[in-house]
Image 1 (tube, rainbow, N blue to C red):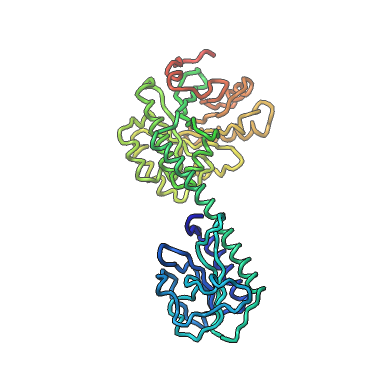
Image 2 (cartoon, rainbow, N blue to C red):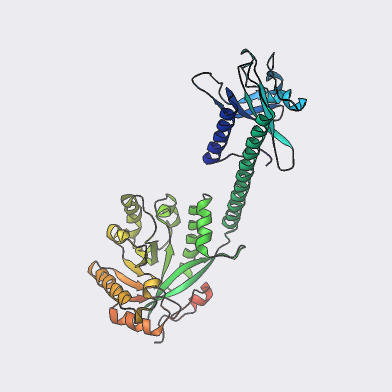
Amino acid sequence: MGQWNAGSAATGDQIQAILRVARRYLAMDVGFISEFVRDGRIFRYTDAEETRHEIEEVGADPIRSSVPQSPARAVVPGIPDDVAADPLAAPLPGSSAIPPGPLLSVPLRRPDGTTFGFLSCFSFRPERTLTSQDQSVLRMCADVVCAVLEYEGKVAAEADSRRNRIQRIIASEGIDMVFQPIYQVGDCRLLGFEALSRFPHAPQRTPDLWFAEAEAVGLGLELEFLACRKALEALPLLDETLRVAVNLSPAAIASPLLGEVFAHVPVDRVILEITEHAVVECYVRLREALTPLRQRGLMLAIDDVGAGHSTFRHILDLSPDLVKLDRTLINGLRRDTARRALAEALTMYGKRIGCEVIAEGVEDQEDLGVIREIGITRVQGYLLGKPMPLEAARALPLAKTR
């Protein structure tokens, strides 16, 4: 804990509460927490009974001017003189004009034992007598403050590490794209690919966790658009009859960067997928962002439809071109009448509103047979082709052997 690192509001509230508890237990008029900074100190927190005393605003204070003319002294047997008389433990600026009373200060220490500040309480009443128990209580409160700060420091260091990790990926464009084929059910014709991100970096984990980490450190949009740009680079290398599906969050779609990413892209060969469980704050804004692209031929797909978290709000408010049935609905379709009934209903609904329906996660030949019977028109899944590098995707025939 090389410096004060109470970055979060919650941490600040905890420390303020600890200071208040200490002051009230000791029946003191003022409590404060100060930190050493170069040749001075900063008052990080203060606490007082507002109805009785006015305390100056928390701020910086040079060491040489921080000692009152008649400094308050700690009246506790056994307290070392260097703690009781240290100018850095003196009361807040402006308190010297008030009749002196007892002052009790205990140092705040880092894990290596070095002191970085003080937790102090003082009274304006000379008759207030302190005991060694009071010192022990204040010491315990100081230990708790140090523990809170140490934990906050570790959290901040971890956040910095995570942010640096994502920044390195963005700077080096360290995402590999793979492409999973999408086929027409009736004639087994190759229609295009869904572009999926892969992260060849430590720690080894699924792409959704990488994107979640990027979002947590404020770099979610940057990572999303990096993946989108790398996916769109495949378009000139694929047959001109094929489309590429890319995934973007509602926040990315509403971003001004969307227009830049698609400015020079043949969007009539692009499918933009939005997952059904993504939160949309404003559908009007989302539609406005999508309209220019859809007018140029972009197709909109709602992904993960039929999963347990589906609300179908995206379908109702965004009028997509494609509805993608979630793999949890498709897997086991042949032996589950409830899944089949829901898949049939969604397929019929899609046809009624003019949507093509894609079945995701097709891994079983019998499930594929049921898909044909239901009338689903497009499929993708391991049975038909796993995600593959661009070179392998380019080598696929446009018509698949049944």
